[in-house]
Length: 74
Image 1 (cartoon, rainbow, N blue to C red):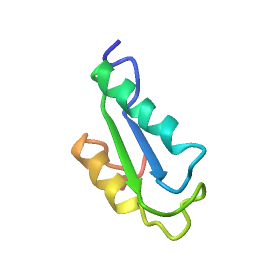
Image 2: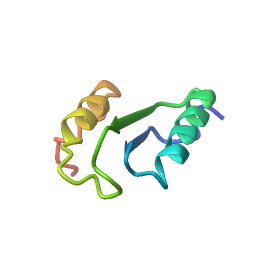
Image 3: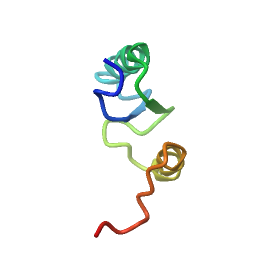
Image 4: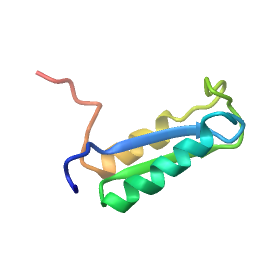
């Protein structure tokens, strides 16, 4: 199944009790496929990731994959 799934970024807060366990399980399943996956797991932020600046870490990961989101698409 490798390369059939787009690189996946998962962003969760540990205090998002209804969803964080599913996210962790999904990350594990994605790793088993060998496809690129990254989870950003924060202590607090709730379901809406309030006051969490996840952009710099996600941008860095995309750049590591060779995906430059700073360039404008033509």
